[in-house]
Length: 103
Picture 1 (tube, rainbow, N blue to C red):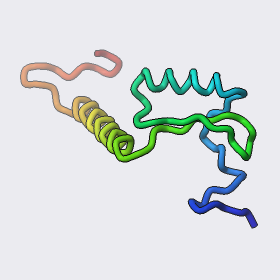
Picture 2 (cartoon, one colour):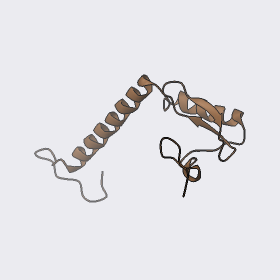
Picture 3 (cartoon, rainbow, N blue to C red):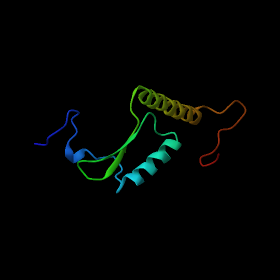
């Protein structure tokens, strides 16, 4: 039987989907790049993983970070919807639809 922590994560899957770094400096540089690109909100932290021994960084936490992630998800969904509606919309009157492969 696999032991789990309070959130149900097991040791075997604790690092799944995370990038591991050999040292804290490298993790910090990658984290700073993500912050500069606007992909991290709140106050992220760097930590040494007790399972794999590598360094990871956590995304921001707190209510503002959650709010920002929700707003970003909504923006992405709206952008996908706009792109899809543009793709599926009939051409304006008096214009022929572009042929397959034309733009």
